[in-house]
Image (cartoon, rainbow over the protein chains, first blue to last red):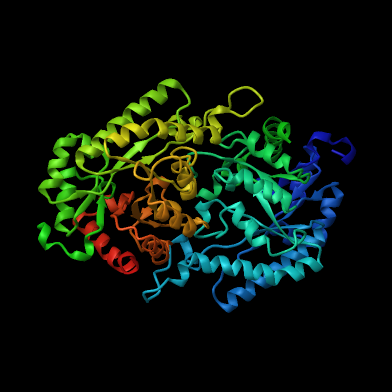
Length: 303
Length: 303
């Protein structure tokens, strides 16, 4: 669909490429454009396999904006080499975001050091009677704040914002020691809103009793960099990471949360990011069609 | 082990009977006493199968206190019959708690109405453009507060405290719309601390960035009715409800959380409540032995 022919009511809807995991960037761009979308949120693997310059050209060819780049982060390593490796990788991610033309780099900040065991088990306790460093959640959180601070000048010089993503507490041990929007905002507070922001992903924050207040706070501080929508379905998939559903298939009250977002006057993109084997195995045009339908029914009316 | 022979350092350790799921109350009492414990926290199914009077006698025979009764709650039904059924059942639970001699009735408050579908799927949305009542988290939370208020006089007259249990947000849809200790305390605030309290279960709250402050608040308000310990293990079990591990097998920093509990001057029981197929299938004496060992290594030194 040419840029001119795209429906006006979909102007803010963006396909996060995780939703069409098996497609290349060019294939995802093609189905997004065909469905009438104007934006796409690529993951780095799909950008890197063609290179960031070529990725930018692909988006331009299909008349698409990049709504964000997923993802930087994994900043919690306790050792010097882990720290250096993470900072280097995040600098590359910042450059890639700038090259594909998005200001928003989503950051999944990383879990506890004790989680770096294949298969997901926990490392045994270190000896000693004090706090085990592998399980020291406070220290891991402090390292995130420190390393965000180290990345800020580089991000600012590239016009890229580091977007802290609170992840559902189910992932606190192994993926993200930032578990609530309030916590993300408290880390962001030390920095300019143009350089450190937050993402509100319904899957991760829908349960939070403090959500309304923290969304309002994020809006007042101009830190909302992305609103991501997908649903909390049950029973959980064997891999809980793959347990997200299309909007409307689960338990999340999109009417209420979307109205809180609307009240902040956030006017940016709304990404659909679904990790789910059934969705990944469906024909991509069908996935986009469901995504558009659910957006029109459960999200757009409340914007 | 006779009451006199029991080790002093285990005086506060209690076996929650969920940890020995396949044992009757008498069998669980026997292994707890043999392991040197002075307390047990029974579930209602094990009390009801012998009757509360007989249950009280069994505990007395083994020289055990009841540290709590699990559990009341499930207060979120949106319809009049669901409300009446829940209130009736909770009144019975209050009577049972009083009969077995514990003042602490643990309350798992219930999930969203949309979760009442066999197998755990979500009910389809109700028609209409507004908030779907089955997914209205705010309304479900308000009903919990209202119904706690309805139960308070009956509980007070029986000398029983309604103990609000915040559950991990993984259970927000289908088990408990109270997800944080702060939220539980805010509901409790309207009532006397002797009648509405909270439980701190490490499995449910370990990830909370506000945990230290909320434990301190719970202590100041004298609302801590129980400290329950078990670990967050990965990978999650297929049924995430059964994914708890022995203290020390997972990611939780018991040194830090236990020291926060100690700072409140909480002097009550510490229950071990583990839902885990492997633990349930182990010989009960082995389970108790592991439980005692882990308590001595990871919990007791920080009390």
